Amino acid sequence: MEELKRIEKTALTRAKKARTSQDVAQLRAEILGKKGALGTAMRSLGDVSPEERPKLGARINEVKSRIEEALDEAVTRIGVAERDSALASGRYDVTLPGRRMYPGAPHALRLIEDEVVRSLTPLGFTVATGPLVEHDWYNFEALNMPQDHPARDMHDTFFVGKNTVLRTHTSNTQIRTMLTRQPPVRVLAPGMVFRKDNLDATHSPVFHQIEGLWIDERATFADLKGVLKTLAIGLFGPEAQIRLRPSFFPFTEPSVEVDVRSPMLKKGLGWLEVLGAGMVHPAVLEYVGYDPEKVQGFAFGTGIERLAMLKYGIDDIRLLYENDLRFANQFASRAGS
Ligand code: FA5
Image (cartoon, rainbow, N blue to C red; front, top):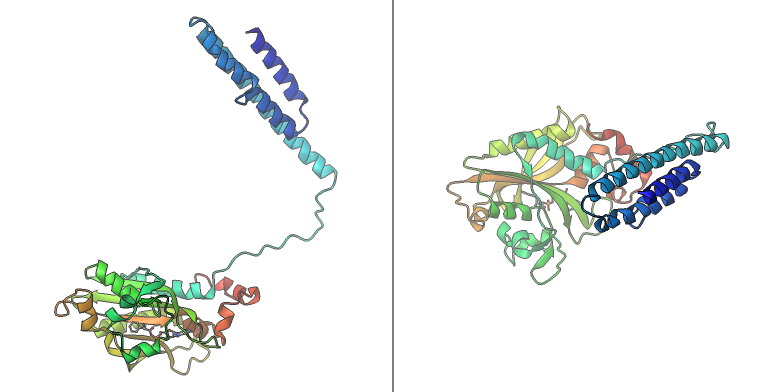
């Protein structure tokens, strides 16, 4: 009990005298820390008789809370004093110009991806992802492009191993989705893709696509047109129009290329090609174990860079990758628009 009284007295006096936050921290460690004076007192409880123990324990707790209070008071007092002295010594010059803040802005490619997703989620689409390093089977074979198919030439491919490629399109995610889910399926698959294309104003060896897939008992070409129109309006405004031209993809039949025209676009008076699409080929449905007699559907895929270039009037794809803040910040105000 005597020793406790002494500890308390010293601690309270030293707390009052403390001048800096370090003084308080040191005192706190010396008295309240594990190896501090009170900690030692706590441990000595084991040596006293069972009758004495509760009384002594209660007393230790009392002393502890009084010391804590004194230390807290010291912290407040010192904080105020330190601020006053900083102000008095003129460390703040209120006439200096403020420091400029540079808030981040979403990248143009992110904005386009978000817009596509936002336009189509009300129709029941959800987002799916697939691997960037892909087995040949998912990237080509199951998409009706066997080993020697000439359509493979259109995708100049980076081979990582004999049967492993950097995916050349997001269509691998169609296959992976259909293999793991049963219809109805409605997914959007955004992501990075790779082709051995030389970097120039309109091509990059690494670029981004977003893929759509809708499979159901009765998902028709008319539904595809409706989805594409919704997408065009979401991206290019309510007056956007679409035009479908016959095309070829090994994994869709019939296949189309889709052009868009909108007064919102600078080149709005002409038709601009924006994506490829078509009804999923029955052979692809068979590859993934669906019955083409029972289910059908459509897919579409588009290049996000090209959409960004059209929408924002960017004439060189390289600007999208250079991270020049003067370029990147132009999109700050477009987030959510
Ligand atoms: C495809 O990749 C098909 N998978 C799209 C598809 C999906 C069709 C589903 C039907 C059904 P394509 O090879 O045309 O298609 O590429 C799609 C888009 O990617 C092009 O329209 C273009 O916008 C973009 N693209 C292609 N190569 C590059 C490149 N090197 N740099 C930037 N964008 C590119």
